[in-house]
Structures are given as C-alpha cells and as structure tokens.
Length: 478
Image 1: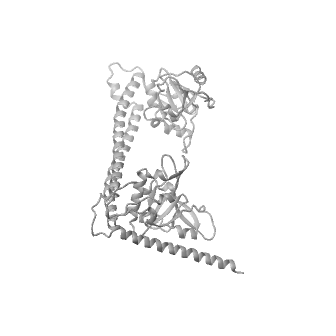
Image 2: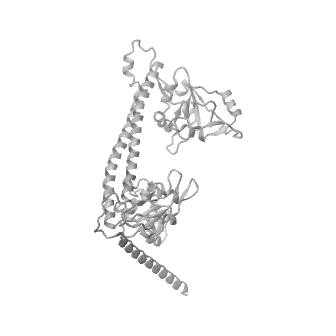
Image 3: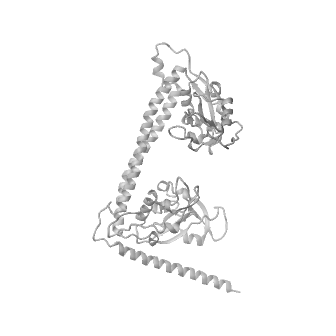
C-alpha cells in the first residue's frame, strides 16, 4: 500500500512494532477435569463480526493448561488477528483491539484467543488504537487479499508475510491526536448510520403492514366502496392446491445427463439475481430432457416459480429466454381461473408465506426442502378477480416507493463507509490533524520500541533457558 506521509514520520514493518506474538489455544471442553487446567473465555473468529457491540461476550468457555494461559492471557492493548477461516466473500485477516470494556466482561474469567487467531502485542510505547485502526484500514482497502493462502473456499493468512507490511508511524503525541479525531468523526458517522438503519427497519415494518392489509381486504376497502356496481363475489379462504396446479418439474430428483447439454437447468440459485433470472451459473441439460419436460407439463407464461429449497419462498415469473428446464429445487405453480398470476406472485412472496411454512415444517434450523403436501395446504385469502388486480396495482405502486427509499438508504450507507475509508486514508497520510514540530520525532519512538523488543526477546530466552535447565535437572533425579 502506497501512502505518502510527512517527513517526520517513519514507515517500519509491522513486525518491528510487535513485541510479542503467539497463536491461540482451543484447549478442552469446559467439563474437562484435570489438574493444571483452568477455565478461560476463548475468543474465536466468530466474535470479530460483532466485536464493537458484544466485546467478546459470546466467547466460548474452554479449559487450557496453566502454562498455556500464562503465555496467552489477553491484556489491554493487545490486538487479535484472524489467521484462518476466511473465504471468497470475507478474506481472513480481520483484527480486533482488546480494551477495558472487553476485559470487563466476566472480569474473573481470563481471556485467550482460539487457535484460529493470533495474539499480536504491540509495544507499550505505541498507541495500540492507532495501530489497530491502520490494520482495519488495510483490511478494508482490499490489500489483505495479497496475504491470503489456502483454497478458494478456506483462506488462511500468511502471517509472516503479513508482519512485513509497512505501517505509517507518526510521533506518539500525533498518534493520540489522530485517534481522537478518528473517534470524533466516526461517532458522527455511527449516529447517521444508525438513523439510516432504523429507517430501513421501519420500511420493512411498513412493507409487512401493507401485505397484511392487502390480504385482509383493508388496502382495497375504499376501492370496494367506490364501485358503481357492487361486487358479486365475496372474499374466501382457500388452500393453495384448490386454486393452482403445483408441479414438481423433476419429481425423481435425479439430475439428468449433462453430456452435450445446451439448455439451462434452472435452480433456486438462478432465481436470486435482483433483476430476475441469471442463467450464467446454471448447469446445461440436453434437448431430450427439455422436450420430455415440455411434453409432461409444458411451460406457461402465467406460471409462478417458487423456491422450495435453499431460498425458501423466493417467487418469480418464468424467464424470458427461449428454452429452459427446472431442477427439483423449485415448484411450478400454475394458477387456475380463480386467481390471477400477478396476485399469486404477491401471495407467494417470502415475507408473505415463509413464517407459515416454517411453522408447518416444525423446524427453526436451516431451511429444509418443502414438500407438495404442506405447500398445497398454504391458506390463501382470495378476493374477486377485479379486486385482485386492484391489490396488485396498489402493492406495486407502494412497493416501488419503498424499494426506491431502500436503494437511497443503501447508497447513503455505502457513501458513509467510503467516507470512513477516506478519513482513515487522510489519517495515515498525515492530513487529518496538524503536525506539531515540538513532538518527539518518530525516529526516537522507533528506537524506544526496538529497545523494548530487545528486552522482551532477552526475557523470553531467559525463560526458555530456565525451563530447559529445570527439565534437565528433573530428568537426572534418581
């Protein structure tokens, strides 16, 4: 990462600022009972995501050897680095800072990192908040990807290489001024983001309220009263199977032959694009399989395709491209003359049906595959066809406004995140706070840090030598 900084700053490697580093320990289960083992709070990579909110309160209870605790017990100012468990969507290398708030959680319980996390203890002559802020900026910039190892699905951090990254180092007094300014500006951004997130949550509540009103007849109450000719039909409650044909497009659940395939076999994954169907990742099946499907159930533009596995409840109209077939992960729902295709699409939205389906499936763990029997029992509030059309019109009108507001909120949140990165870039380029010529030069700070590192290394070697001598004397005893 190329960052220009003032001449009064230094640019040491991260390793030059760390006086102690060690891997974590997962230890034993909390019910393990043996001398020399003690209960600890073990901080995992899963704690990193909500660290600012939870401060490790969700950490796991484990038991480790006393000597393991002695070398790994966390102190204020320690930085934990995630070294394993990353993936394509979330690179490994996130960091968290251990502060007083984290140590105050169950204060009688010692805290250590797990074995997927590395403890990096900065010099006491350094402002650890400053260093961790830089490491967070480094991660968010995408530079961390250069230090990844492992497979595509499981990434590890090349920690020795990571320690070679250059850290822009101002004088200690300037580090403190920078941290204070970052906290001040970020506090303002936090407040703004919270208001945006609250607004988005309220839009979600309003969305649910609209659907409830729509399917209870309240949304069209004024419309019904304004009809010159009274409606001949009343609202009824029916089951989905009474008003549609539910088709399992591949009931054997056997995948067809793909040899020489040219026709996309569409599954739940291809439905997930925000703007409709995306066949780019679909497997390709044969003309023969496609023709069998056409002969068996056909493809109708009034159909609604419903995800029964994976993204349960996602519903879409059929794709527009000429030829396609469906996998067993979806249902084809073909409306009868009593329900319009557009109204059916709204009825089968995830926010309309998933809670009922999950209750019927009697599970809260994962998303199971939905069977035709349960799906067919889905209760539907069915108005007359004219009123169905009016409900669709009103929902489309209102949801267009909601979705536009959501897009604006999402854009504002992205701008806020970009502003955070801009603030950090200015901070680590020496542009966020003014320099003070009376500050102790960063070069002298670096000299003190080096002296502390040397002292730490000497103490470590002395401890190792003492342990080796004690072990040798024990071995010589008759």
